[in-house]
Length: 286
Ligand code: NDP
Image (cartoon, rainbow, N blue to C red; front, side, top):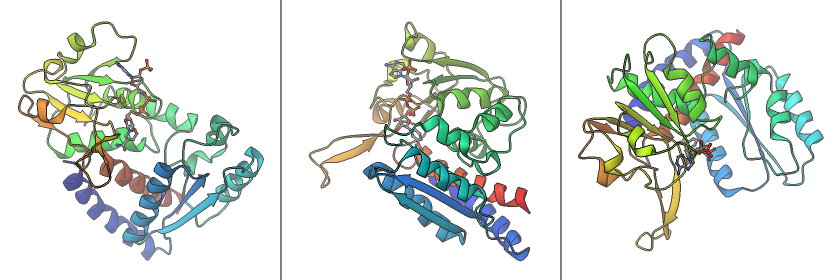
């Protein structure tokens, strides 16, 4: 699912990047990483590599763990004013001595390609987005480009984080293509979760609980999108661990009409939509 769909989007992005270059603009993405979180280092490397593959300008700023909030805000301000940079993101999580909210609020909304700034969250909610948050946008594109009808469908979103669940629900309830759904959001305080998930035509799961969603929680013929990315022990793998989603893929796959795998599903879509947002930011700037 995700890999094939992301390739079709990359093909379109390449054309848009060429068109920008013809006008003298190279779309530029700056990623700021504070500290040495190994997962964050991997994500940041992947973003830089993808920019290079697409012929975009990429800047990675690695700052030490003991960077002060003031120093980070100064760096964000510098990048806000750098005309070669169209998209800017600060990799989360940040060390605990730095106020994440303050940092996100300091990013110029026009460069906020993660779509975490309240201005962009608000614009998305009222249906006038400059950017869509990458992971939910990736899920939506996966549905649209796989020919899955969303209009009038009951979409159940499991999880209500600001990064995935909430924006996902807000996007699917908008008017128009790829949305127009009837949306229910469930979370850890929901009573009898399986009775709700079983009513989903499209079940989008973003919990961070490995293999949580089992076949008995899913309606026959439903579409299941698994956002979860969990590393669990696996003595049979050379690494000693493997990535799994929030859905018990093997148990669920024969009951549903479509299911996104982990890895290879939402993950590739997320980075793809981040690149798309950076290209959009560059287009908006010329
Ligand atoms: P959060 O931990 O911020 O949110 C998890 C949500 O799941 C919360 O709303 C929580 O409810 C809910 N939840 C947890 N346990 C249960 C339960 N037993 N029953 C019902 N609801 C539950 O995680 P994120 O949204 O940031 O991420 C979710 C998953 O998606 C993670 O595995 C993450 O790694 C992955 N992810 C993958 C991305 C990708 O590109 N593929 C990008 C972003 C995230 P409550 O609010 O009540 O606590």
